[in-house]
Amino acid sequence: MILDLFSLKGKTAAVTGANTGLGQGIALALAEAGARTALVGRSPMDETLEKIKAAGGEAFPVKADLADVSVCQGIVDQTVAKYGGLDILVNNAGIIRRADSIEFTEKDWDDVLNVNLKSLFFLSQAAAKLFLKQGRGGKIINIASLLSYQGGIRVPSYTSSKSGVIGLTRLLANEWARHGICVNGIAPGYMVTNNTEALRRDPVRHQAILERIPAGRWGLPSDLGGTAVFLASPASDYLHGFTIAVDGGWLGR
Ligand code: NAD
Image 1 (cartoon, helix red, strand yellow):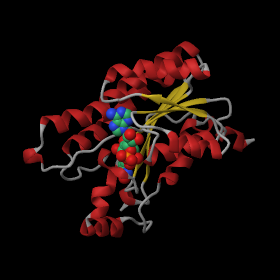
Image 2 (cartoon, helix red, strand yellow):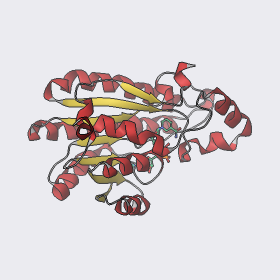
Image 3 (tube, helix red, strand yellow):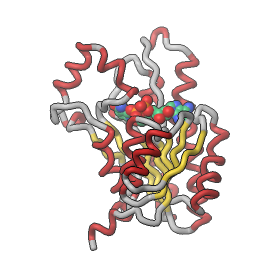
Image 4 (cartoon, protein in one colour):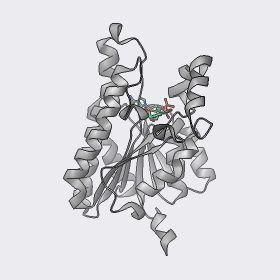
């Protein structure tokens, strides 16, 4: 049955930055589709755990600060210790720093690149080593951005990191597709989360962005659920190295 292709029953997922925002929306969607889910991050996962439990799903928290790349192997190990394996990794955790490029600091550069790109790579590497050992393929979903395609303004380290994410998604797919490991991305549009709070508080930027979105509204964490389940499921087994924009039509305009 075609709908069975979208089921995640019997699969194990790990989602970084799952306590809030897009990571919470994705974790909930994967759990609703049947995946047991490790909720990875530096903050308490209580709200996400409650939502997943209320939906009849199964999840557990993994405490990890992805500013430090040395946590990556432990995230995979803890998930395996709890659930016996791993099939799906969603690299969602990300931060943003806003300042004019002329005065942008090295710290704001390094902090963003470390979480958004360096840890994403080494966590993917740790997951892929396990996928190879398990011998049943795997799914890696990287959360990119519209700034993987566009320049943006006043966010030089963020744009660099997210442009890197889309390139790395292609590279990892090229190396790992032959092992049944699908590496793909989602580029969210302008979504209502902490990440965009500063933009939404600025009435001029908020209105300008809204007017440019063909769908006529900002996106919500739940808007990513279907695409995340698709990319995590057997329905996308021949899809490699591609990043899907879920942006209310922004990039087409
Ligand atoms: P958010 O700020 O609500 O969530 C970011 C998540 O990353 C949080 O769970 C946070 O705890 C986690 N995180 C940050 N630093 C971490 C660290 N050092 N260790 C572990 N976890 C850490 O924002 P969001 O919008 O939900 O962002 C999720 C992802 O989506 C990010 O990669 C972001 O760049 C991307 N994104 C967001 C938008 C948007 O419009 N909101 C658009 C495009 C891409």
